[in-house]
Image (spheres, helix red, strand yellow):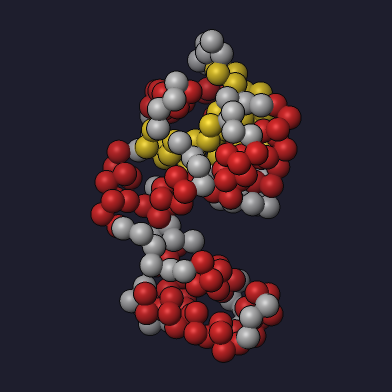
Length: 202
């Protein structure tokens, strides 16, 4: 039986190398690929792959949001997140989005091929070290709105700029930033953003 694959990664060289590597396997065929997260759902609908391999960091829509859309609208496609970022928070969010596999890019090629076959057979596959780290790290303490405000702060926007982009009052933005700073045990929003990103909470 041939496993039909969709590849989504914004780095062209990585995507091409991944395609070449996977197509060395007799039972894999890549039926579609894209470099944008907001093109994943359309590709999945058009090509109906068995497995969608999604990177996290992509333009248009991140891989976790794309995973949720594929899981909801193309339930016959099982999602595996394949990423450079082996962060505990990402794993928890990937599972919440419906992904059934999470593999870091520095895993051996044989491990990725094995993960794809196991997911195709109905198993859930997670990088073991990351699973342990996720259990140790616990849940993200940030609320959805605190996450939104920190993400908006990535661009270096002022409080007024963040408030405008999120349709919130400046006072509300300050409150969310203060809460995020307290929950990350940091001194300012730049440090809070760094800690939240390192832990995969964003």
